[in-house]
Length: 293
Image (cartoon, rainbow, N blue to C red; front, side, top):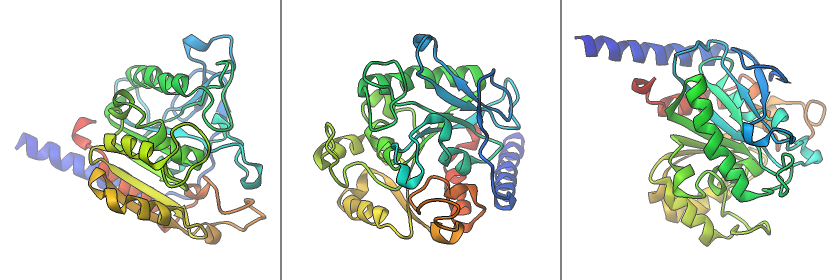
């Protein structure tokens, strides 16, 4: 009977979270602040190894955060610096992860790409790839231990460059690949096309994809693009590697373009209360193992 009550409680919590998510209004992304972490704040964090440099990540503790409790975690990688779309490539300007998770219930981390000289964050492509991957390997467990991140429920997401990073960085080796419960890529996908950087070919991408080991991925695109369509075609012959879901987002109907945003290639779409956001959040919460929280 005790186990049954616990199970029912977890299910009710999940349904309650989904109900709150479906009713939540449009979001305002919190500004990154240079102060100590606290519930409901998005703060700038410099890791001990990078004191004296401009390298940093951002950390958001949910509004309902309490010490000693466990929370699922969303790790985000930003897009490239691309003024045409309004993307700055900066950690502090990331939007996707917060839009997908909302104000409560999730710890949200935006990880940096480290420049070649390790003095700052890189805003275009990968910088020092090894250092970028190692930064996540060191800091993600550190954050989880300190703030109650549930290591059984860590997700990775990204927009544009960050969408490629979901696999390119997130599945780069066995150690980092073990972190993730699920993956969300919005517009672009590792291996679909070449870009001119190391190991961007489909053969190398497939070797990374094999580390997915059947875990779920949500692959999104704006309705004016055919990026997930290309990803779908690419993944058709590799469907055994993962559990793939595709979502088309009607960005043009969510924003006045170009008055509100420059173009539909954007990570801002989940700030809008829309059926697409609800579907993405339902996908996300369906993947969380509530028994681990």
